Length: 197
Image (cartoon, rainbow, N blue to C red; front, side):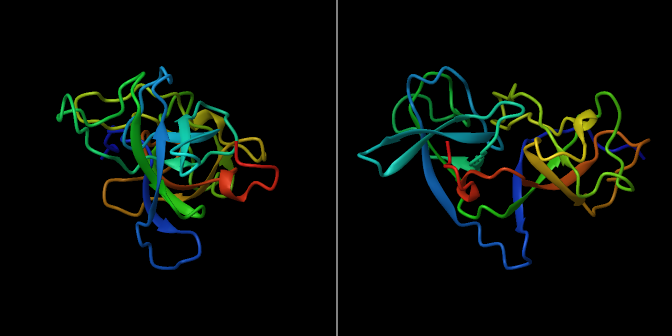
């Protein structure tokens, strides 16, 4: 049976070192001047700015091939004014979000299968890029996926392939489209010795 095509961005699921995944998170913020929307599961990067005198780092949506990724949005603080049914961060609005506190977090994410599929027999341990954000404004989910055709043995790509997700009806092979994978951030901001933004 074919894999289900239902992208939801990057969802934290585990720790690379086998420790218990606690779901600990850190608070980040989007600046009101930022004209890009963001969603649950969107990858973000630091801008170097902060709110509240350095207490809350400012982030922006990550784009394909970006380096020093901070993490993926786990959720947002509810809006205290305006539309309580908005489940994502609208463009050009200041909004608080949360990302995993663990720089070695593992994420679950679907591949796009454009230009081929990622093959579990040849690509585990290689790195891969991700697709640009479009976002689901009804459910609030990210539509970021792995860019299947980019998987390669090179340090220049932002994500590392660890395994295919072991659930029924999910197969990762050259003939199976839209498989769901476990990945980590290859160039995670918190571990980059040159700085995080």
